[in-house]
Amino acid sequence: MQTEEQLRDFILNGQLYYIPHVSLDCAIFGYHEQQLKLLLIKHKAIKDWCLPGGYIKRTETLVQAANRNVKERTGIDNLFLQQFKTFGDPDRAKTSQFDEDKWFETVGIRIDKTNWLIDQTISVGFYAITDFSRTEPQSDVLAVQCAWFDIDSLPKLDFDHDEMVKEALHTMRVQLYHYPIGYNLLPEKFTLSEIHALYETLLGKKLDISNFPKKLIALGLLKKLDEKRSIGAHRSPHLYMFDKEKYDEALKEGLVLS
Image 1 (cartoon, one colour):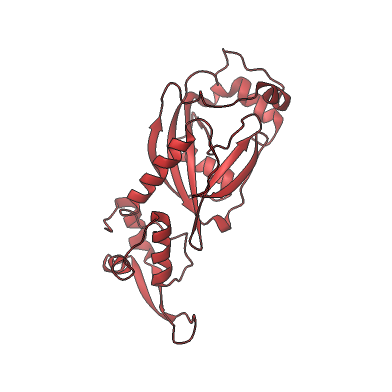
Image 2: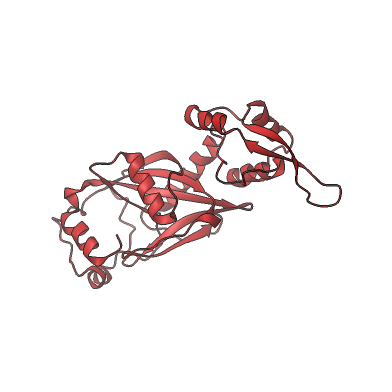
């Protein structure tokens, strides 16, 4: 929502277009040059940072709604998206420090107990991965800040979003052994050391530098090129690229890398 008029309509009439009491939150992980980050937003009327997310349109599937929310915050469409958990504890919003006066100052509307936004809300969690150097984090009329944070130095999060991040990170790391995530996180042509560094960073642990890339090659996911990259005296490693057809099939069907 980019205008106050759109926000007012959402508050007063959103139940006509969105499913009440069911939302989604997106843990958007960003990778670049062996750094792992997380995208967070800061609302005008809420003290702490949050994961980006929103409600689901009545005409959307869950994946379409998640993709829309991710695109609105990153400017990138059709990222790798995975649902990881649903959150529905009755007290999941009690930790929120909501400033009613700030909300009224921002929106000009007091929300009473009959508003569709009030009451317990179940949230479906998705995670996505992108190259954060290619994104343009987007704020809007309600979210005044949208920024990347190092995964090891996150600020305190509102609601139950600390738990969400923990679950999303765990699920992403487990699923890295079953999906060849990396096509949009590396240059078109890359060295085995670069894909090894990618997986080490995402997994947060050391991997055998010889056996891990060999597994990707054995599965037919990587193609060795007749090209080398000169990176110093006596150092010219071969370049590789993904076999796009096999990569897309593996993303759809899954595989085993461990």
